[in-house]
Every structure is written in structure tokens, then in C-alpha cells.
Image (cartoon, rainbow, N blue to C red; front, side, top):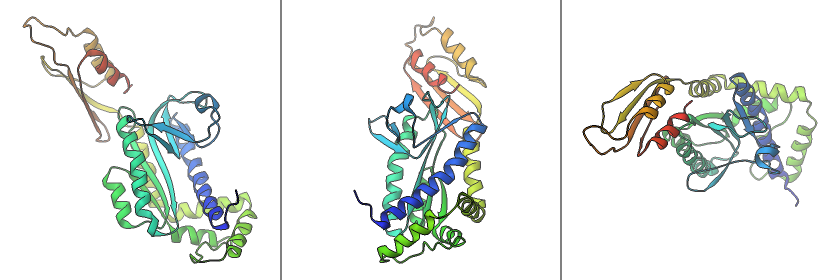
Length: 289
């Protein structure tokens, strides 16, 4: 299948951004002993497939650009703690639809893996409307926006002008591709550093939010056996011990209704659930360890 120069150029920009941010996310994950999964080989986990795919609780599969896992390795799939998408758009006319696509993937996955996933985010590059960005933020999605003019100005330092008109000829696009393919690794690194410098405040804000979410700790656990008195714990293990030893019938012959569990984290996040029996409550708590 022949790829048009315009399509190939778009792919090159997307791959550049994926590699640029992928290196930082992998480094971040290794620093804190997480595993960052991204497109590529991982045969013990996904066979011959290269895409990173997770399924929500409705049976829908979603391809992700980056998934940070707890207890994951190259050979073993872990529990997801962060889902991060990356999107490039050259023109604003496509940005609102893309925002909807991103929400349609991230929000169901956050709901499905709420016991372990504390962060959903998107790195959007290019032209995006304020309405599209606000739509994402209002749904609890962390956003890092790399404006189109920043990308253009940083590539211009290497004599590549990506600010071409929508009706630009294929010959012009082929010329841009040839110039790009002639860049050295050092040239690419300098463009990456230029983009990071120009977006330093927003970039650091995004990474700080990721760090705070993944390094959050449990502040308190409130456990309510529904026929008994309220118990509060600061450690998951203590809550587990009480449930393991708790009789689900008592001397007053009240019918046991279940457990309500409320968890508050140091970064302000909250998690709660109601469980009909001991096994369901234990599964919920053990996912937090």
C-alpha cells in the first residue's frame, strides 16, 4: 500500500513525539520501580502483537500509547496505575472529535481499573481548540498541550518548516521528508530539548501530577460492617485482618448486609465501595497493596 507524502509526514511527527515522551515515561517508571509499556515487542504478554491493548469492563478493547504498570516486567503483565494517550492534530477542525475519542478510551479504563489506576492523561500536540482541551480536563484527564507553533519553531532550527499550507503539493512534502530523514540523532535530540524548554512549565506540571498520583499513599481507611460499629485504619493490612476475623453473624441475630469501605489518599484522591461479602471486600483491599 502506497502512503501519501502528507500521511507519511503526519506519521513521522507522531512517531517523533511518541519516542520523545516515551523515553521520559520509561525513565520515570524505572526510577520509581514501575514498568512503562509502549508499542513494541512484548511476546510473553501479547504474543506477536505490537500494540498495547487493554479491555474495559464492558468487553471493549482500547489501544493505548503508554500504560504504566505496578509489578509489571517485560515478561509479566502488571496492574495498570496510569493510562496515557498521545495525539497529534495539524488542524483544529479535527480536534473536537479527537477529544471525544480520547475520553471514550480513558474514562472506561479508569472506571474498570479504579482500584489501581490513579492517573489518566493525554499529551496533545498541534492545533487543539480550547473547548476540546477543557472537555478533557473537566473529565479528570490530565492534559499536556504542545502548541503547533512550538513544534514549528523548534523544527525550523534544523531548516524544516512544518507550517506548510493545507493545499501544499506532494513535492513540497517529499522535500520536507527528505530533509527530516537526513537529520542526525544529535539534531533530533536538540529539537526535543527545544520543545521541552518551550513548554517547561506545562511539561513539569504534567509530570508532577503523574508523580503525585503514582506515589500517593493511603491516608486512612474507613471500614463499616453494615451491622456493626465503624472502624478506621491507617494500614491496609489492619483492615484485611479485621475482615478475615470478623464474624458475619452476631449475638443480636442481625442480618449481615456487607461492608462499606472508604479510602482517602495523601494526594486527595478518594476510593469507595460497598461489598456484599468478605471475599469481595478482601479483593478490593488487596488490590491497594
